[in-house]
Amino acid sequence: MASNSPKIPNIAELMDKIKSGKIFSDIAKEITESQIWTSSFRHGYADTPRNRVLQIASNVWLHLHPVKIQRHALRIKFTWCMGGITFLLFLSTVVTGVILMFYYRPVGEYAYYDMKYLQYDVPFGMLMRNMHRWAAHAMVITVWLHMFRVFLTGSYKPPREFNWVIGVLLVTFTLLLSFTGYLLPWDQLAMWAVTVGTNMARATPFLGNEGPFAEFVGATPRYDVRALLIGGSVVGPPALLRFYVLHCIFIPLVAGALMIVHFWRIRKDGGISGPL
Amino acid sequence: MAQAAAPKKKAEGLGGEKLHVWPYLVRLEFLCAILTIVALTVWSIVIDAPLEEAANPTKTPNPSKAPWYFLGLQDILVYFDPWFAGVVAPVLIIVGLMLIPYLDVNPKGNGYYTYHERKTAIWVYSFGFLVLWIALIIMGVFLRGPGWNLFMPWQYWDPHKVVALVNVDLPYAFGVRTYNGAMLFGGAVILGYFAVGTGIYFFMERKALKSVGFLRMFLKIELFLIMMGIVIKIVLRLGFNIKYVWVTPWFNI
Image 1 (spheres, rainbow over the protein chains, first blue to last red):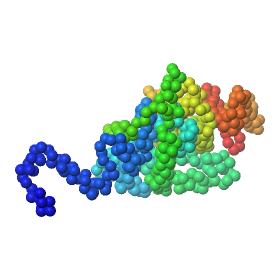
Image 2 (image 1 turned 120 degrees about the horizontal axis):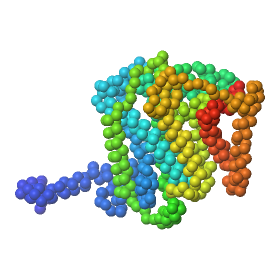
Image 3 (image 1 turned 180 degrees about the horizontal axis):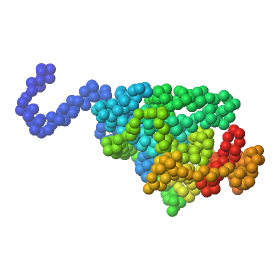
Image 4 (image 1 turned 45 degrees about the vertical axis):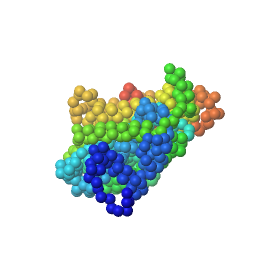
């Protein structure tokens, strides 16, 4: 056939293709061999050992995993799946939290009414708020269970000591994330729970105005470690703003950085723990 | 039984076949993620997050409770002053947890479940986590009512419940009536507790001293004595109405 002359669609031929179903494989071939497709996807999808490796090794999201893994590491009975679920719940709070940030102002006059607005006027606002709060609570529980599992399997033992230390920091930051977020609804529950919590800071030895040895340092209710934390001597609008910034920016960044180290160290310490 | 299972696991771990992460692990993670997200979504549709009336600094609720995950610490406030329950205890918990891999030098039980090869470690951690942390949280959430008094689930939360304060300090209970005498007595009890506890531990584990090292053993036993000290203080308060063991002008324990 004269290949340079423009192709005239042959109706009969086309009907044959449609009837035989060949048209689909033709279209698929056209797409997967196009420049856009080949530039986007680095390997085929056929279930070959080579592609199984490439799925992990050449994918930025999946390459956190090793290419191969020991059989016991797949057992839910061994891992409880809690570390992964904790990370997933963290991602859920990030997504829902960013959505909430579009509607919420951390200002004494507005915060509570923005909550009401979110709950009653914003489409899916209540659902976003619920998911954010429940994911945060669930994350506290799953991170404790993850830690318990890691202890019971002795996974903190050499060479994974350092990653356990990072993990303890992550547990602490999980609690701090949850605690700083607790104030933001700016209702009675929030204000008094955070009052109870931050009141502890004024008993800090040396640095809190009611703590042991404070008189030697000169700490006062307006000038001690608690005042630094909440921006005054009571939980008021400055505390709201501080906790908002800590909750949305500072702690997530620190926790995110620690997570990177945590996941990286799992790989570098020889993958998930197992019998030696 | 666990000991019989351990060698089998070992053999399987080292030479055992390795599986491709794609698809075996990724599909598992994907399933897990779907289930979690579905559960979270259903939970969020069914139960609304609480929103009470607007924050009011002039209206203190009774009881005022910290977020539920801190209620174990808030409950310890009954038995200890805030500088310990609210500041020193949490710091010790965090530091103590971080120190675990450096204090526990038992090489067994690395990467598999075993109770028999590390009984003490599992007992101490489970006691701290399940009793001192989780059980106290459950108590704080469900059983602590107005005035932080203990109420059974079927009891009415009476804000005017009268609880007689008959607590005395430990030196007083032993007949020490002078201030300085009480201070010396209390100090002797506390320091004696740590000295005797440390001494007994070092004597019993004297053979391990060389291989484990002095600092490791010292930190291990001090952290353990502090944890048990909290339990002892709770028992002293609930069983014997002891308020403080050691009263000084600067701090009370």
